[in-house]
Image 1 (cartoon, rainbow, N blue to C red):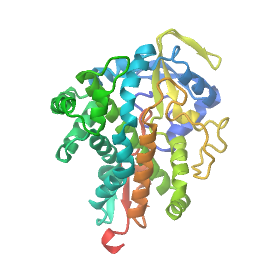
Image 2 (cartoon, rainbow, N blue to C red):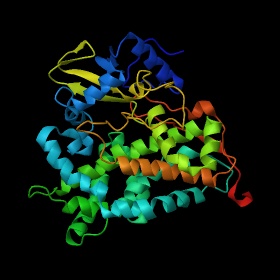
Image 3 (cartoon, helix red, strand yellow):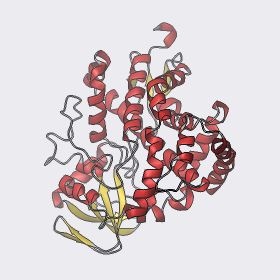
Image 4 (cartoon, helix red, strand yellow):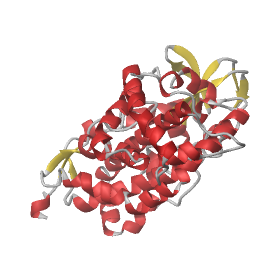
Length: 388
């Protein structure tokens, strides 16, 4: 049974519990008072209201929230900036997401990496997909885009996870490892994302070494971590909807639509905190100055005013505007293409390489978390590769 009152900073609410809770909140209004980190906060659950909030960066500046939370560990990036400063730094950093290195890896690297990872456990007949695949694949994607040597990839991944847990030692180790690589790429650029960040220029300026390092950390926190949760959510959705799994296995042209439906049905960023420095009114509710506003993306994506039968996972649902990547907002995700492609390629590889795939423990595999959301374990059984 869903608790009557929760703190969104700590609650897990696995599976239907979060969606059931948010549905009851929506019945009270599109904007309702709640709790975040033991303090009052305002939860935005209506699709129209959240769309408006994403577009209103004056009332809901994203940079302020990131300055107070992730910046002390990650460093300063366009994520923790607003206004013109955000615009300039975003232009400096985002070419890395559209570089030739990303295009080449999209075409030639994603699928081989997915199969390389599956090779390690395909003969076992059982696996925890989080431990063996979903919790690793997106981090190795970023590492290879950066041009990190293969023998250093797992160390870089461990430091990245540590930084996401606000571990300062991990941040120091990450910096010490990356600085020599930055120096080498400044002297001799390569076709990789690291070189693209170092040599991007806007209005006569380039990123400093520390700014480059900060944006690399951002690639792991905003890119790899959310993609990790999204792939886990996808496998949970397919493994608990046998008709969808069978349909996608029979016709991989359904994968693109399945990705879009997954991002609506169980988005990896469920609730996104923002600050309201000056106060504002939204949905007929006054949100006071200095308050935390909680952008309930997962609630807006299941708003019956925007989506028919919103709780149903329907891979044949016509694509529609969803808020999973901050649609229309100044801080919308610049890595949308890579995230979608990684999710599609990972899903295709897993269902192709693991025949007779079945979930062993549905309860353990339920997505959990009220901010970043995904399964902590996905125990599965399948026909071993040697018998396929």
